[in-house]
Image (cartoon, rainbow, N blue to C red; front, side, top):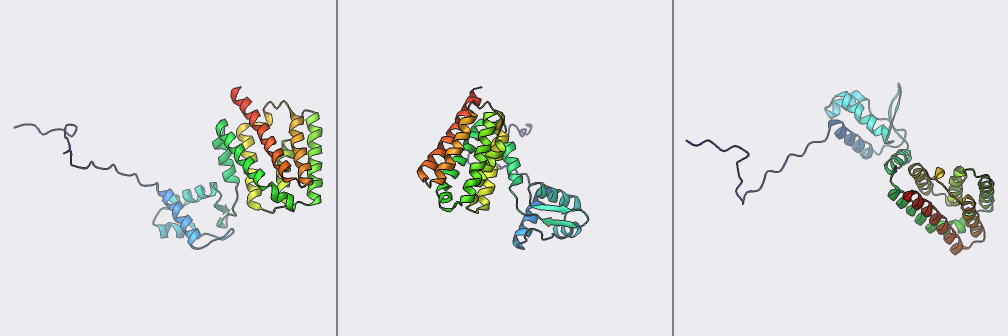
Length: 249
């Protein structure tokens, strides 16, 4: 009597379909996270609204309290929930900070991604500068000129003026009162600088960088959309050259 073939020797009929591998189910606390997200959305909870107690959530979901705690911690880490000690768990006001931190971390040591981020900033700002020119006040222009004067003094002393630079771009678009735009400018700025370490790169022309900002302000003050857009383009082209130099080095 012949021996049965081992599984390794077993061959399927050519017409038979192969057995599909099992898909591993998601971790329990991940499933709890999704349930909590759906609960927040379906009940239209807003910032400051409380979630039910952990014990109640565990009972309703049919899981242990540890799984609920892990899910809450995960949602805290991405800015959806916050725990107030001795009070409870609440929906957190939306913030770009977790996204900003993750974006900066994800871009670390990736000059290609930094270059892509620079391009997004360029398109965003050149595309919206015309609206700024329509809306900007004399007070904002005066504040921009004050900032660029501070940049000039620091450039002459070979000092970093990164803080003024960030303020400049925020102030340039402040008149639009667009909170999403303001947050995006901060995301692009901080993530770019964290990822590229741009403020400490060898910038051989700090006065040229100051001049870029100065010319942008004067074009805006003159209500010259084409010149303002061109000056912004020149500014971001200069940043591109510094990134390229650092890539070679």
